[in-house]
Length: 500
Image 1 (cartoon, rainbow, N blue to C red):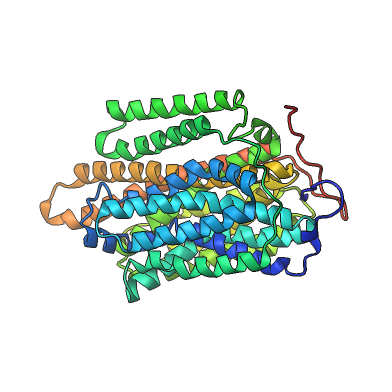
Image 2 (image 1 turned 30 degrees about the horizontal axis):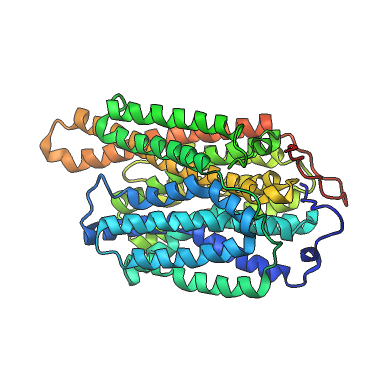
């Protein structure tokens, strides 16, 4: 693994005795952003009843957040580069807290959807500035490994932590506290940022790429909306096909525009680097499968095995522990000695193996024998993969592009989550409906057939998720060719920037 050289002597941040406390602040903000993608999952049935949401619309509580987050992350990364990372970090924290307060006080489903989208907007400002501050604070290979190990653990386990916190708050308070809880966290992080974090001034002379924002975000929204509409309408419905076509066209035009824009949203020289591109694609594919797992296991545990919200959250604890071990005890130690793909490929194989175990679950599976082994393998695999992805993707980047590079990694994560939720949920629901229709011959057996049909839909979708994990491992093996850094070697030179 390599660090990021900023040119000249070492930056003051490298010898700042408070830099590890600064990492606590950055990690706190990152945890808040990541767990908010899933904390409302367990609370969703309560919120749906309270706000009278339809079954077709309830998914927007999840996707409004991940879509706004993923669609605007590249803009957030560029804003961080332009106006300064510490400033955008604080703005993101304050805005996120305000949007959380609005969502907690929601009186209609539309108000909650809007608040969740607003949370995503401010998360898109906050997340890249956090990762960028981390990358420019820790540049020595040994320290960088430890820092990214902690950060990677939060990125991978924050979603699982969200289920636990969501279960506790929903069971003992109510679903609104799944949003209110962000306010004290944000306040503490803002105070810590002012006291502990340092940053260079931003590059105020550059411009924002507004057409790039419209094209990129519009393309992603069209794709995810198309996936979500495929279940009620069918894959060949004219609207669904039109949304997919529009999404592809917008994203192709986005790539073309990035080669022409005076201040591109995503400078293509960043992802022309083979290792960085491989990390971004691996991240996106891995998260498709991970979000699918969270979605199906939450409903499986609550609706099929009849777990309470708190018990459901606690059921994810072994996976969180496995992520922690894989990231901080294995990846962080080995990445100084082996190339990143030597961790990423086995990680994806383990995660895929965990998924395959889950395809065997039935309506009366035992947690200890059918679910727990799969969660442990998934957690270990994700821990092995996420830490080298984050560290390798942000190593050796020119300081002026560190924000947008960080945003590219985070975008891959959120886009993967959005597509995974919409695509796998559509496949599971469609497959379940077909199973129930073909097997429901005796009305007196309706309840048992419906339960079997739901689980059948989950297992079919999980088979697809397992295949996507294998594809992620293949991409990592073929594209990520970076070597382990030599002991005591200086940080890599930044990626060269094109001459204006």
